[in-house]
Length: 374
Image (cartoon, rainbow, N blue to C red; front, top):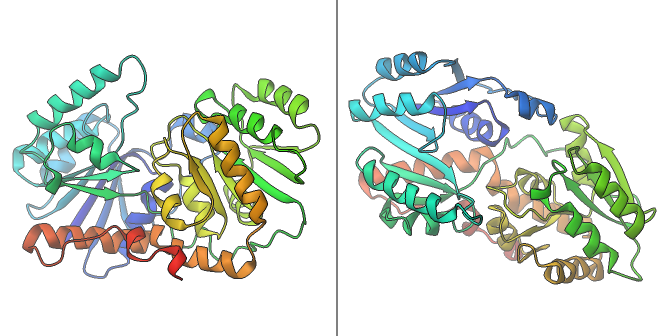
């Protein structure tokens, strides 16, 4: 079986799945990307990860993408990023559809909370209807993404809850114990309004009588205003690390007591997966796709997006409970292997098997073993 993964760039969000699939001797995996790394992502400190045993082809033009799609075998399977505004991939999808090949869409929930939300919902309803015979199914990344897609008219039987499965080795063998007695929260991401770091600072400022610190990793246009807020509301309690190498980010996450992702919207939120895989509990907003797995992790919490009282409640809960003991961190990390590339690969193959012969209806890996049962 030859599986093609079509993405605009080589992203850590999909490399884990590609490597997990490539570890199966019966599969051939080719990752097709428009570019190695976008300038925007590179400016954020992203690094292009290794694809392991998976092959890679670059299609920088629409014609190149078409040529690849024209020459793939008739029994190949294709996992394509999105259904619109996806660069040269859209050109390849037209060829794949014309050839009647097995095509899957992988997509996050669309942010339809702004004024243009009605237009987006209507547009996607039309796109799903007009392309309904062109894709085999949809891999719906994030909490309630399946529900959102089904509400646009797609048959529920064609939509499967999915995730961005990370490379299994990323968070392995990291020293996870925080040697400090002080409770440490950590935020990792761009300092932009969408991430709502100001909400996190204001919520923490209301918590009196607790000894904690907040580590912030990242940079962005809101840095100065956030720095001012922190100095006024949390003097001496915030550490600003700026942009640091990816492996150092992983180490900082592993040593923290709780990662917080307060975003107004995040298609998934890979830092949550990274934290859980390192045994670090997480708090995120209900607007983060990864809120699905936070709920099932049985640690941390999910707060209503934009609700400072709810965020404060969750922050105080983890402070009251105290830092997780090392045994609990190990249990959490063991459960979170369900978010790794090997787990994602097995789940995807189960989906394919179900579609082909209805052998066994697949269940999302984070549902199979709850953290609290370990």
